Length: 408
Image (tube, rainbow, N blue to C red):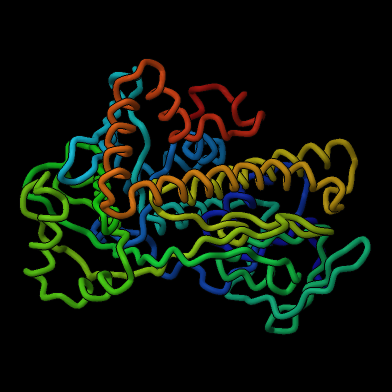
């Protein structure tokens, strides 16, 4: 039987970031992951279909974990502008890094790049043990410890177990934590696209009555990752379309903003479901990332919300351990739970309201959203606040905010 202080179920981006963030605290950490990265990343690999818009707050956390420079060295594309518009209408808003005296607004990074960099880092850390491939088979909660049985019958003990095992979290379900969920009745179609005109490092998002189409700039000036949120039947039809027909529909749906669009990859479809765990913590248990919440991919904020869960939990565990307190006690985990439930609820409500406002072609609703975009684009002080929110600067825990700016 191996004894640890913290056992993390799930070695994805969020679970690995927590493990790296606890290095040097004097705590022994284990990560249990069934699917470790198989092949090292190569810059010659085609772009992966799953990408994230890493905002300034997440960049700062990843820099603190000493992996951000590695990620940028692998493959990351800075974006210096954002444009949002309502198709066939006058509503439009644009953000520019230059206008705000910033070098960039964020980076588009393939999820596997972030995960590979974190995995490499975690594998080098003295206090972190990667148990992979391995699956948790059974968990029994005691008063002072958690007893964990793996699929190979090896047993672990921990003072705290952390669920970072994704949207369909086995650990959350095993702990009988209720889940509120709703079907967005939309599917995200994702693919890599080559555009006729260069993207110029601008993230673009077009709304129409049927759905939302985002073009996220990649490192090649003519390559974008698209996320096309649309009704389920429409997504299924477009996934099966002949390549040329799909390219024509995509180009029209994007108002020919970047010229003709060519498909460079497979088309992947992902059903969209919102989830919100009723508890983010319990006795000797904490939930992180998609195990605690999943949101509409409208603004690419899902992973950023998860990374701020990580940042908050790192701060709380380190503080409680320094003070000699039992960080596995639910009494002490409540600050983490309250803070992150609030942030997730605000984000979920905001995304839902935004999605509903831009859903459908009701003339009154269309006029309302067009006027809203124009006012947000032109009224003094509004855009900086929206940008501050998009960059995650208002969601950072205190310890991360206080790190020197040059750490980011």
